[in-house]
Image (cartoon, rainbow over the protein chains, first blue to last red):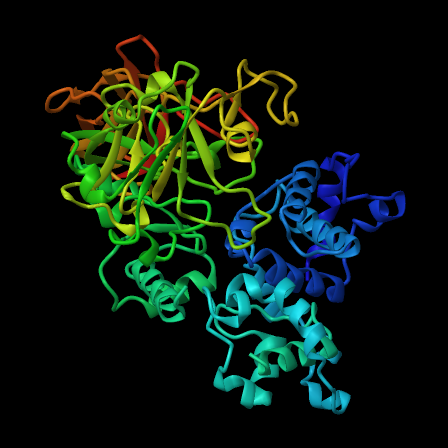
Length: 210
Length: 394
């Protein structure tokens, strides 16, 4: 990836942002902005697909070319509006965007989906079986579902812009279920970077009760 | 809510937006376009955002006076509501707030008011945002988030007269049926001052170019505030509330506001007073030839449109030498308030090689399109000279 090279010019132009609210940037993080490791970039892209794409597709993000201060305000606004990002995740996504979609970035950046497809998956993304059997906890799954899945699949798994999951046949085909959740399918983003295997097992267990 | 119908809505939406979509760097966009090519005809449109669907009209379409519904730009914050919620049986328009008598009207009841038709330009405030330097956040619209359509509906003031505005009522608030994916996202709620609401040309429109308003354009009813930018033209309208003050909340108090006086480009959110975006600025576009076209030497008809918001277009100038000299174009047809005016200029191209063609309009108030618009942090109201490059071949 050419990301580190791209960044040097950005850094010169980057206004040091004194931030407010949820996005707190320490001096150490500021230094760190110069680069992201491939694994960090991959995780940031996955977070964007899981968290930002709940409300809008990533083409809206890819077309932006913004300085650090405006990215900061934008990401902060999205977190305030309900983007499910922890403090660390917010800082990572923000760094990714500042490095990638800066005012001098070329017009023809690959899409976030294309970048993700080109990058190496991290080793722990294989299907659940490698972790041994997991026991899903439906009560925990209900909360995870509400935070992560409900925006598209609807309250009570009754469907929305995404398919109805209550009594969906995919629940009986665990391989297909795990494959879809971990790696995505069609418009559904990959959740492997966001949900642990225990989380997915819990969501599956809760869905099975619907 | 019935699962089946919600899914049907999504399917319809995907089909509806898919066919004929051109551009789109995103693989996903292209995929959607390919999948839906066989679906009902819509487009061609240039997709800016796949979901919620935002797409602009290629400017070559503006060689026609009216922009067809299926080629009209589409913009919303949350996408259309499920189709069944805006079906005539389920849909009601509520009028409430500072009124003597609240109303709840079916579409049929609403259509008992005197019908009115007018042709008006509808333009997204962010149209041309991509031209601002430094760049600003938001959908990077280029030239085509605008269109000219005939709107048929009833006067908002007739409906408000039935309800009876109380003397304290100074703003009229609109709410549509569209909802964000997350309940923590603020609703798109807007208000206009009562003077604009009571203007005889401000409509509640149920037809677009003689056909029922399509879902993507606000079915069954939308506001049309002729001469004002499109964020006042609430789609999927379900509620009108008369209030004493401007609507609170993000989409009225933070978004769609401009600095009252010009500010330093690139400066942050300004300390200067921000006022709501309202009226359009005088503007013109070149519809033909197209960007990058190769032309033969000899006569070339340059065609375009120009509009002036609440004022009229007085003249359009064209330059075929990158702004060194300007000639007046011929305005076609009759002036009609709020509609755009088509224009033509016959250029006798002699010099072989690349050149820039520019146009700029002047309205009857004497306002002229500037070379570039004043920078503002939201990237609103771009009205700089339109410009394209062509090559003249021997």
